Amino acid sequence: MSPFPGEFSADEGLTRSEIRAKKRRRMLRRRRTTTIVVICVLVFGAGGFFGLRAAGGVFDDLFGPKGDYEGQGTEEVSIEIAPGSSARTVANQLVEEGVIMNSEPFLDEVERRDATIQAGTWTMRKKMSSEAAVEALIDPIAPPKITVAEGKQVEEIKSIMIESGMSADQVDKAIDDKTPKDYGLDIDSPSLEGFLYPATYDLKKSKTAEDIVQEMVERTENELDELGIDDEDANRVLTLASLVEKESPGDEDVRKKVARVFLNRISDDSRTGGLLQSDATVAYIHGARSDLTTTKKERQSDSPYNTYKKKGLPPGPINAPSAGAVKAALDPTEGDWQFFVATNPDTGETKFADTYDEHKKNVEIYRKWLKEHSEDSDEE
Image: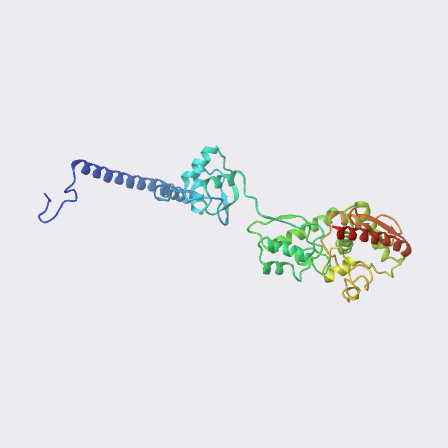
């Protein structure tokens, strides 16, 4: 019977056991609400950021999603973990940052692995599985890297940077029409060619193309300082070193002799009229071939880098020379050689000559090598 005429009780038609179960569920809901209210009062009474974070964790545990993401995650995000943070505080923080879906699987994984979470700034990813998130905190995610090999030219370095994911526009802006002075290195050189140090660089998310170039130039500056090369000598030394890098193999003795040849050619005792006559510099103008050969037409260029027409060293380096090539330029072997040719490119064997007649004989040895290897290629 309803308490009022014309109305029906919500419990009407239910059995006694169903009514008791309904009352039990209602009581549990009231207790849950009371618990949340009490927790909120206690937490917010504690005040401040940490209280808010704890409250957020409570709500996430009670009402948040109960699943877990899969895989290693999506885009990178930087997470700063404060000293003294508990595993639950970190879990709640990761939920708020969108790194993990909820705290419980993460805490279970921390407990399973008996992991210790260190304070600091960590590179993580959005939507990581709890397992991946804990792994990232134990074995940090390494930022992507680029490697600039010795002997690379600016255009090649730009391609490496762009292929790593950097914007072509940003890379062009960071390098084109720039000189060492634009990056704080007080050296007169026509471009950044030769001043982008060959090494491996981290590509943290926060780094721009200009940041990477700045790092490359600073590495060059450090190298110059360590070798005792003054700013006024740096362009000359790196220019000579870049020629040695391109025109000789990695053998230290050969490189020192090649450096001496170039210096002898532009000395008062030059037998080439003060001309370096380096095919490497001509190839730099027109685009290098693997064997550095050039045509008669290319050697007629009026470019300041054409060492068949312009006396002395070119205006600046033609690549990023290795430390070995720089040391060879600083400490060339004493000798009167003015000519050289690699008579066996496979082994790097190089012959040096004081006179042009002697050099022609060495060139014939090289041509014989070319003919023999050309015949071998034809047979294959």
